[in-house]
Image 1 (cartoon, rainbow, N blue to C red):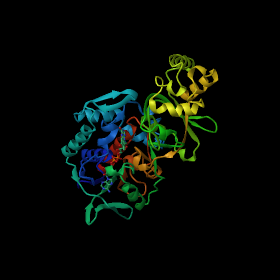
Image 2 (image 1 turned 135 degrees about the vertical axis):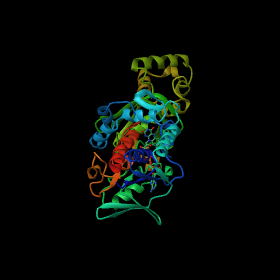
Image 3 (image 1 turned 90 degrees about the horizontal axis):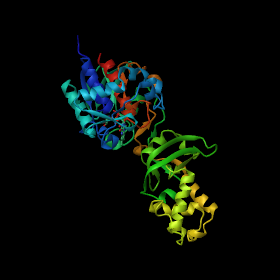
Image 4 (image 1 turned 90 degrees about the vertical axis):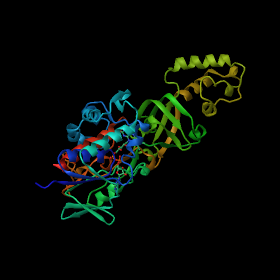
Amino acid sequence: MNQKRVAVIGGGAAGMMAAIHAAYCGAAVQLFEKNDRMGKKLRITGKGRCNVTNDCPTNEFLTNVPTNPRFLYAALNRFSTSDTMDFFEGCGVPLKVERGKRVFPVSDKAADIVSAMQERCRDCDVEIVHNKITSIDISEGRVLAVIAGEKRYPCDSVIVCTGGKSYPGTGSDGDGYRFARQAGHTVTELRPSLVPIVAGGRLCQSMQGLSLKNVALKIVRRDNGKVAYEDFGEMMFTHFGMTGPMVLSASAHIPDVEKGIYDALIDLKPALDEQALDARIRSDFLKYNNKDFINSLGDLLPLKMIEPIVSLSGIDPRKKVNSITKEERKALLETIKGLRIPLLGFRSIDEAIITKGGVAVNEVNPKTMESKLVSGLYFAGEVLDLDAYTGGFNLQIAFSTAVVAGESAGE
Ligand SMILES: Cc1cc2nc3c(=O)[nH]c(=O)nc-3n(C[C@H](O)[C@H](O)[C@H](O)COP(=O)(O)OP(=O)(O)OC[C@H]3O[C@@H](n4cnc5c(N)ncnc54)[C@H](O)[C@@H]3O)c2cc1C
């Protein structure tokens, strides 16, 4: 019997996993990566530590996938989060589970994940070709070859694993969407997700560079006060608005932020209820009894925050602390417990962790990842219209869809 020839485009998380599984099935696999190194994006995941998956059951996993979760059901059934853990531990990369069931290599090195996948590719004779694929040759509804400039590589199946459009410096700059459109596929609107948020007013600018830990963030709709997202943790102010882990996560819950309908509400002292915070303020006021108000908050707030908070409280900064009224103290307390910042939009897709949108999943078979329009054409990873919240879910999506595509193409 003739050996099946599979071409995989993209040497990232999905591409390497797809190539390995196509090779397991006995196919002759060529993996095309345009960078001179494999897994450039994978190397910077999880701040260089690679949050490789999330140690949760499938039903919980799917609640972390806001776009097309049902499409993933079969793929996660075939290759679950525990399969991912078994795979990497089987490759000699011990893993550990951290807060929020996030899974990382014990070494805290994303490079170990890349090396393990590269080694496995070598072990199962995947041929790595460092070349940029420019098009896919399709005739009479089936794939014939992939093309790299003047060079043509004949094949029986092609798996498109070119990633999204975010962080284009890593190589994922959207080629796969072009291939999909040329094959007749619909590509849904491409938008940033898990991305810094642009905020209005001069408030953020005046606090730029300030990192906050242990604060509570709520994103609320201005018209009805409905809470779109809430969390507790870290965030940072920048010249354009806000970023940091909580802010990136929040962005995935407010895709319509450009409409200007949301405010961020930050509780700077979530560990203290109103009564406890009032007691704390009164104790500071006693300590700084004869000082100007502006000089009384150094124990309570970071330096960069004092002026903005004083200004928002409406209290005269030069007023003596001993003459501040109960109502004024209440206004200060409310400002600290509910710093309100209007949200205007997202930073560009280049700065996003994930691309929302992609190859329309109703044109792809969820059990095989094969195109319903072109025989022998497969998609896996971020190029598909799938995205998830932070926590290792996005890499798991890449791995699960890749295993299914690799096995189906390689059989
Ligand atoms: C800063 C950052 C941190 C992240 N951290 C995490 C995390 O900790 N956990 C998590 O789950 N997710 C994380 N993600 C998301 C995760 O990296 C992606 O979901 C995942 O890499 C997608 O895998 P992929 O294989 O589909 O695409 P990619 O990993 O982007 O790989 C695509 C590859 O295709 C190649 N390519 C593209 N076009 C061509 C072409 N024409 N010819 C040849 N090669 C081509 C590219 O060079 C690239 O190597 C992070 C993302 C970023 C940007």
